[in-house]
Length: 494
Image (tube, rainbow, N blue to C red):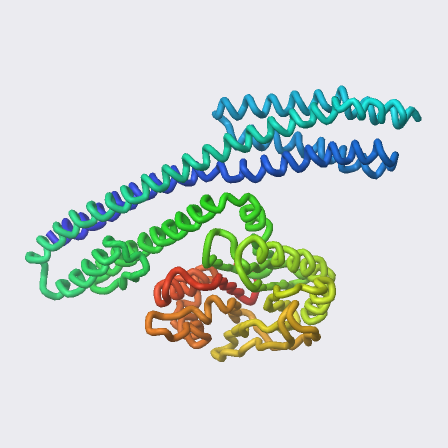
């Protein structure tokens, strides 16, 4: 009977999870419209580049204007191909795309190319006379109108997605709650026939699952009791974390759809990390305070032989302005990292190139690991200290210079010893300053406690997930600031 009860609980959780997964897959498919919004904006920009280059060459006879003209043609063709894939099955959008291609060819063949050829042959007066007629302006205006119609249709489809999200979300949660409640009833009936020594763990598990089913997705489920019951608890906890992550993602998508900002999606893509190194295991987790665009970013670069560089930067503020400033710093920092410049010198370079930043500023930490030499060199620009777990001790990678963009100054490069198996944890202040329900901060001590309680053989990805889950589950949500965690395992990959 005990096996039947536990099996019934697992079946209820599984069916509820399948219902949610089915809905999540539908939402994931619907979100493919967002790249089409970005690409339609970029298509218009590339078409304008064509016209600007052609007119600039006509007026100045400067061949450099033909570069954006030619590049705009190539990129416009690529973007039309992308949009055909992203909008596949939408007959009206296919019609708009065909019209855009036709009108672009008409403008190129009847206006742009003949006028360019006349200038190149020395008959600039004829080209200018043709331009004065206004036919070119009218043809390009028709082309822009076709792109605008495509953008309006994509925006209409996104609005329909928003309506679908609003109407479907409540039904999914109700389905999960109802199915879980039915299974819990079976478990309660089965408890009367189970041996006394497992009664208390099952009652505790039941109470925790009920709390989650009622909507408290941040309430952790502790796996206790006999091995079979503990294993079930771990499975349910994994499901709870996934449901919580899906709910957070849904909230962020809804905020982004409300903002309807292609710029935010483009910036998010540009700021994403590429932490795939050949010699080190690196994992990161980023939890935006709002929407899908965070002011935090991190990245990882190979530094042969046998080395790696890691940077974590926290930009003041949120939204597109903070995202643009973050992207600027990333583009300034990445090239000098590849030149093997010391971390402090790299921050000096970024500060000099940024110049006056008004009220914007950033904190950051840059480190390079040289495993053959057994050292970690780092520079810290007003950022929360990194934590090095070295042979049972915790060492802080503290501040070595001021904030970036706020005050003039310089940044020194400090050095600590590392050995294979050491772990380095980097965070932004959105983690350390996250508030628990009693008002206390999560803090450096909270990080150290979680790391020391984690199984060390699970790898950096599992540790990063454990740390970000600890922040979610012990602190008030949603967070007031973006929270980012980067975990580095010192030593070559297995």
